[in-house]
Length: 146
Image (cartoon, rainbow, N blue to C red; front, side, top):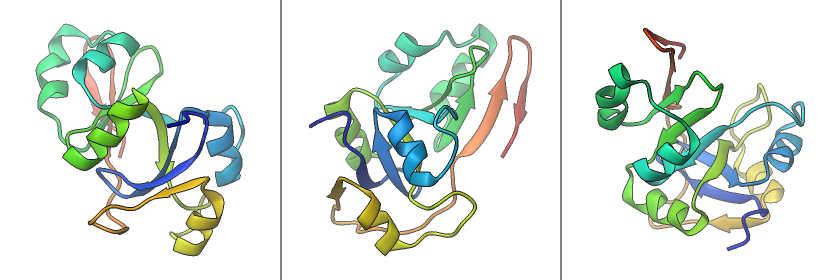
């Protein structure tokens, strides 16, 4: 797998674009090329390579499902538990992820297929679902953003 390609996949939450090239994802979505994207990782070991989880939130992060955490170093990371998407991510190691729709617009499968370099469809097919919850955690407190 080429980490610079943009893949259209059913993620653990919704249909999304996945790549290690953040600028290409932002270009496809029509937003600022330097805008941060959330990072999906397949394991807690991969999470530990990216951030240090504050001690008081380690249990919350380990137990969270379909939750993204914005850490003090400004990285937004989600550990994927859903088996099919997790196996896909293991091949890449980690990936930036974003919903497969233009910024501020609804999901359009034709747009998504046209924008991706490669379409990875599994037995689940493609379906819209709610985005992950987003928590901002600091050294002392956590606050739900979405």
